[in-house]
Structure formats: C-alpha cells, structure tokens
Image 1 (cartoon, rainbow, N blue to C red):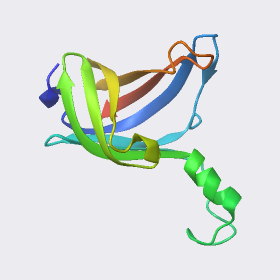
Image 2 (image 1 turned 30 degrees about the horizontal axis):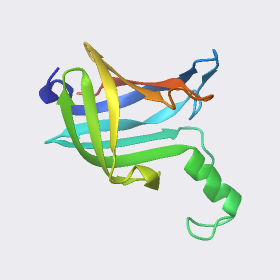
Image 3 (image 1 turned 90 degrees about the vertical axis):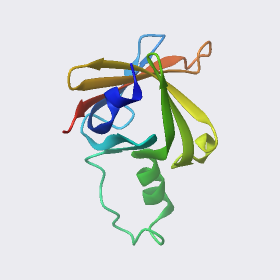
Image 4 (image 1 turned 135 degrees about the vertical axis):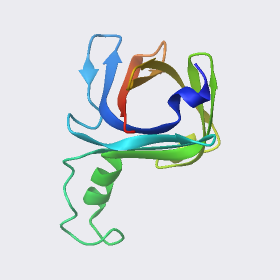
Length: 141
C-alpha cells in the first residue's frame, strides 16, 4: 500500500474493540459520526457518538463538570502527519483530544478493499485489557 491509496476523505462506519477475553465493546456506541482525511501527508481524525446530547447546564465553558466529561467520553479527535509503510499507517500526532498522544506516533494496520478501509490497532498487549481496536471507514469521494 502507498499513501496515495488512502488519500481523500473517509466517513466512519464503525468502531469496535475486541478483547482477548471475548468481550466486544463499542467505545462510541453504535451510531457514529465523523471522518478521517488524508491529504498532502497530513491526517485528521474525528469520531463522535452521533447521539450525544446537547449541554443542558450551560455553554462549552460553563457547563457542568459531568456534561463536559460526557463530551470528552463521546468524542475522539486528532491531527498530524502520516506516512505509510507496507500495510501500516503511522499517525504522528501534533494535536489531540487525548493529550497523552501529542508528540507520539499511533500505528494502524490498514486493510483496503474497494471503497472500504479498516484501521486496526493492537492495544495494551499482554495486559488484562489487551484488545484489538477496529475502525471501519467508507471513501466519500
């Protein structure tokens, strides 16, 4: 695979985490919204639970702590540079909703079939929460 093969915009279809103990979890629920965009060596990823509620207690700065935490738990965003080596896509994170990723590299195995792309990551390998995260996307155009 080459970088040109994934260039463009992709709509998110699903995100699941398959744990080694047999559990399957949907981190953002069943109804997702978002995209991955690969252009000119840069990547932007945005995924949210499409059913997340509007804040009822205030605006983005003065809402309740519970609503702010809920917003964080139902959305993942990051951007930076990317490169492709074989079947692996490396996302070099410059900005992220999860600050611990900034300055690091997230590796994803990429499986491309027609207008569908899977990005697969192995997480916490060897630990009690070891799992495989699978994000599925459809090319938008």
